[in-house]
Length: 229
Image (tube, rainbow, N blue to C red; front, side, top):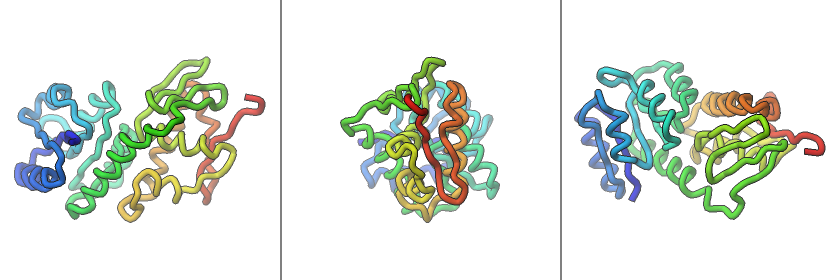
């Protein structure tokens, strides 16, 4: 049974989500003190976090930053505001997905299932690491280690990198990446993938590898391999 933490201050919505998700055999937890969201997160140790942007005291972005500084747990944002920047900010902070309120419950379930399946199932493959451009990409630890240093990636970032490395020096279409990451592209903005890839490239820049993820305009992305690397 997966443990989900719902960081939502709307009591009516929280109770509805809890009732519906419990029917799907999820172990649902809420926040008792919105001044201590991070402390409750560390106590609960959830498998997935669903967090609203508008919260008392501090907004969801604040708590996401704190969580991401200590954990790569998958995070899905909720927002009642019709601001495209909310989705962009969420992805830049390392969120795995974004849902606009009001939402159909089937959409919420689909996104939760897709996220949990991606995060906790794909690492069961036999290949646990790969060398690329002289660096070691560890799919189990979500790390990339090079002579210039090491970085830890989010689940989305390592998944995108894995898909690109599997077909290095070949273009991977945006559609293929979207379908692999989120299962149902009807619920995904095309900009969501762009934000995720840009965040991945920015992280790789920290160890000098960002330029090896190339954008092929109108086609997709490609992980290039150094010659003789």
